[in-house]
Length: 218
Image 1 (cartoon, helix red, strand yellow):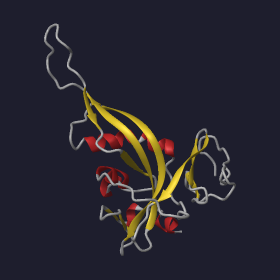
Image 2 (cartoon, helix red, strand yellow):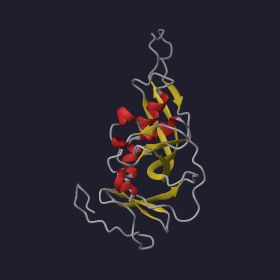
Image 3 (cartoon, one colour):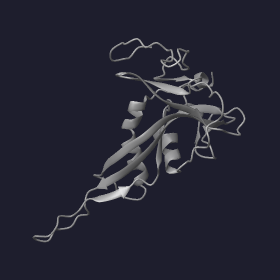
Image 4 (spheres, helix red, strand yellow):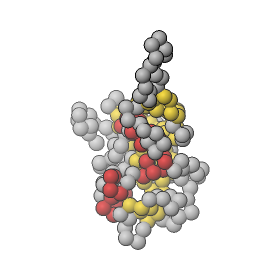
């Protein structure tokens, strides 16, 4: 594939083992199943992250890629409006810890986020605990259009959206530290109408929300 900014040619072979990488023509992250690594096409070259798939009891799930970030984060809010006494301390900023140890960022193409919702945000709000990774070779990685670097840039917005349910985050800023990033193949339930449902009976998404459904199914 080529990088849109520099038209740099990237060989779709695993830098570690030399094997072919899984992915679609429009993808920006490719998977090596033997190495269980995800290779993200970043401006400075290929960057690898662990690749894993959830275990599931669902029959024929549709595996969709999401970035899972283990992190520590706080939201720094401006002081509540009050007048400081002469010679007294200035009103202090308020620190609100992010209540979860991880955040999920949707890595596949999704249309109508405002209308249908965003799986990554929903999994983060629900504090979904990832089950053990499925043993053996993971399924093919398809549809990962969001690189790790871009996904990391979306973390502050996700943190603010979660904390916003508890605090007024207007004027706040996010301070965070990422401990690890894993590209995770999450098994969504196939619905009779062609849509999908998040694991554990979460949100449902109609066919219109997944423009690349046919390609994702292979």
